[in-house]
Length: 337
Image (cartoon, rainbow, N blue to C red; front, side, top):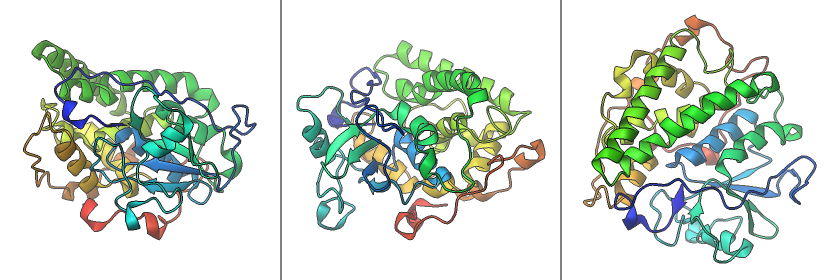
């Protein structure tokens, strides 16, 4: 999710920026960035669905000790994501006040704005990558030497073609679709995005009616990417982005599916509903000029039984759930049901 120019939200036609910095951190270091424990810092906003993918992957794979975490304030300003949640308004590891400082050390005049997730090289303070589509795939496939014992295979080779196909549809119609609807500047543009979004959600519900996960019988990258949009659906997309044909709680299959994931270690324990709501309603001033944050929806239902285990499936395959959330990374009570 990009930072800067917040007053434009809801006034300009939405277009998802391509990642400009596409270097990869790999086992062989072919781009000059070898996988190395403690060298890199992952910068996220818990409000951002694109960044939340990396939060879930990092937890599931047990990379907390290998890849440190910086959490930006959900209320960004036109200078980009800021570290006002930290003492002295500076990230304690990078020593910077704004994520844009790491971008500027890498390149001046870069296109596309300042976005999260971003991975920064700690020794130099320079941005390595903001390629939100690639970061999680590389965490799953290039960082294997640093995975915890029992880490799941989130991108199994035998299923990659199917995973890629499902993710492409989810990306176009759901992940991006809610934004195209929410930031539409014309009625026809909004209606097209709305129709595609709900048609895709209905197709996904049909797929998930008879199987616990999107591809195969275990959690994969495809589930992570759908989860990060669904978990925000009723809180912000239904009202704020006018995606209001129905609430997620009114769709029996998808509501059970997303609760199943939310209650799985590594998913719900990364979600901060307070950050999510304050970001969307206070930053998108073109859509919500009053900045009023709604009190609802009631979050109590997230802990309700989902019964998805009756479909079978093995959440972590031959692996095991991740351990407890590190104390410093626990979501505050204000952000939990």
